[in-house]
Length: 235
Ligand code: APR
Image 1 (cartoon, rainbow, N blue to C red):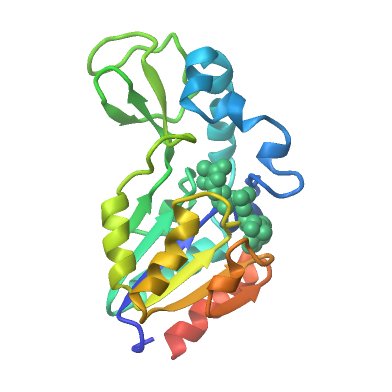
Image 2 (cartoon, rainbow, N blue to C red):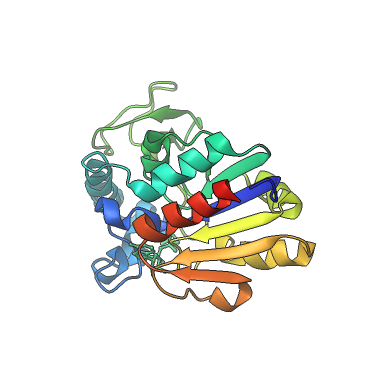
């Protein structure tokens, strides 16, 4: 472990799969059941806000019914035990990393358990269903509230902070992501350009970008993530 002084971990839907949350692109994934163009874009929300709210309301309820798994917990333990810098960047909008104890955590695609007012920008915690009838607690407008998540064609959050962490890291670990969606899918190439970091993919199967990683371990996250963390901490 002393080997690495600045660790960046990226996670995707695959780390939450064994907790019972559907991924997006697996056989029975979310995008096999609903068209992302109908629920996952700003245009979809403009066209049919009730349908988009219903989709997110279902996910928000489901997230509150499941628990973090051993992979989430292993990353929290790694963060506690690491002497150097640690940043966990997640594409996930669930709160399973928080509930497992992760602290230095960045939700680049936002958080399902928060809502944002499109009129005044106010973001607040929100665990219930959300709809066009709700009124913003800050500006009083009705119908301007949306899930605080990043849709397609929108800019992910904190990209500057992520770029700095990627440029300075000496270990980059990508967990449970298919490598289909940018900018996250490009992070491993960004790290490799820096020239000195070790890059690891921990995934059920080879991702789109698997060949870009110096090390690849494939299997269920609840098996391979705790095993990898145990090796790092013993090293
Ligand atoms: N353990 C480890 N990996 C798993 C497991 C598991 N139990 N189950 C599935 N996976 C892997 C799959 O092999 C796949 O590579 O997780 C990955 C999930 O890929 P996607 O469903 O594409 O999810 P993700 O990569 O997080 O999607 C990125 O796309 O739709 C947008 O905004 C959404 O954040 C999401 C982004």
